[in-house]
Length: 395
Ligand code: F3S
Image (tube, rainbow, N blue to C red):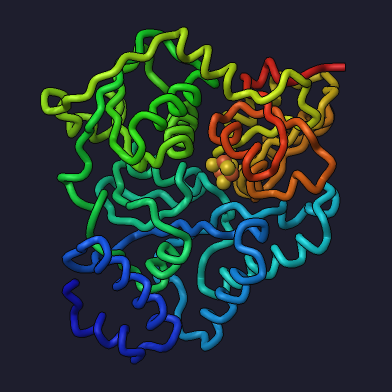
């Protein structure tokens, strides 16, 4: 991979150890994937934050990287969800030892200049690249959204690569950064109208078929932004989709070049309904309903508040979101309505990266196909997959 003089000096340690180690990662990646050079980025989103997933070894790596204080993120860089609500972990019943380690991890990232945004929907809270910007994002649903809905360009980066890119301000130029890799290779004709959890079911079906390919959807009705984040999260969890197009909806849909795509498939209402059922692992009632995968938008919190207004719920309820979105939900009175009904608006974390298996829950109700896919494997718990209205039980 071609390096400028300045980049070579970074590799040689002339800008300090943090930058040298970061360049090691980027150059190795570029060489593996045949990148021609590094390209400037405007934004990063860094995963690998929960103590549950990175443990003590991850914390040591971060503290070591920050040790000489020579490198910090040079562009808008935000952090993925950690394993706790950073401020309210005690009241919500998170284990103390876990919470202490978790805060150390987030502080180590902050020392490297990564903001404590702590969300997988950074595009809702100020980390919003422009169309065609090169970026380095790593949480899979966020990658699908920023590539597909915003039209910025990233590969599905690992956490360390996105962190290295944030510090150097560059990433290797290959894969989804290049026009030729952004064309569709599967046309998906959906034969029914979709709403709510149907979008997750569709993403789950197609992710399994297309793997790391680029699907181009022809839908019967127009999805909103919440539907798009649900769809992308599901595509990225049953498959490894980083980019999708929707006819007349996403900004690069004309790249689909339908005439050139050989693979075409059809999805029926029957398949959607069967997939919805198959995503549940039990018929039992959930003892915890967990919404907000990907992290909830203000509109989604408003919708839940309107369902709960003046009622009392039987099951526990978490709506996971960022601290910034919750601040507005607080002002709008949505949080108070939800809390009066017996639920919680939980910041920072989510049902997959939190240690919910240590908190006495057995069956988790979710409206996200990604969460339904990961809760059994990551937490060892049963899931029920349905729309919000059907998950909540009232006294
Ligand atoms: Fe986000 Fe957690 Fe889902 S990181 S996409 S809420 S699994």
